[in-house]
Image (cartoon, rainbow, N blue to C red; front, side, top):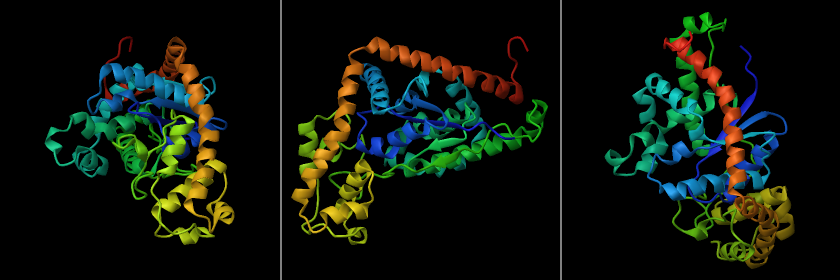
Length: 347
């Protein structure tokens, strides 16, 4: 069966979105909405796999929504909503809990990283998080998923779940009108952002993260010009001048990260950037990088603040997006229930 091309992706409302989110995902999302039907979600159900302060969570959901729009997502062209408002995500996740295998989840490296040494005290939600992610995608029969390198394993699991569901219920799927016995597509990863892996400003070997305890490790989309300049100025580097070409960055993680950030923001190659700054000291380059960051991110921060001044409008956008998302997911979920053998009212 040929499925309609549909994009799904989302981010958790935990902490401020940062430069890594912007370069690694947001710019890609903005481009995709020009050519595809796109569904972008604030995944608040994923957020509570670890404890969240309820007041802060509600605020964070709105902040992430504002950042989506301020970065360039059009809520009229794309569907923007918060996950918990579309119950089909949770319904399908439970069915996938019964399709997915323990051995599959035991191989998920992110659970091991997030749970740490105290795995017995981690929430069950954190353990089955990948099944909910699969439900997020397949509730819309999405065909393409923009993901970072750290989420590729979870997308592979979504593909495994889709295949097993199709295999387990093949004959019932055919009775539902799917002649080839395929109900869920195999979602494809889309990894084409200008900087698919932006690293910490304090450690070039670690990914820039909202969970890093050091604010100096990342540039938040809400940072003002002075804060951005301070963080760039204090970013870790090495004592050598910048090389004249990209191959000279090998083994210099912090230098490569900063050059990569500049290249992505300026829509240039690393070699092109180094033609301009090769041989220069980091003090000179950091000043130029800070100015570029402020130019690109300043308008995003300003627009986010403007949007957050009208919470009712953000809530209206989320409500509209939830209704549009539900209109796609509900018929798919009804078919899933019929295929699995549940009795629905009126059937």
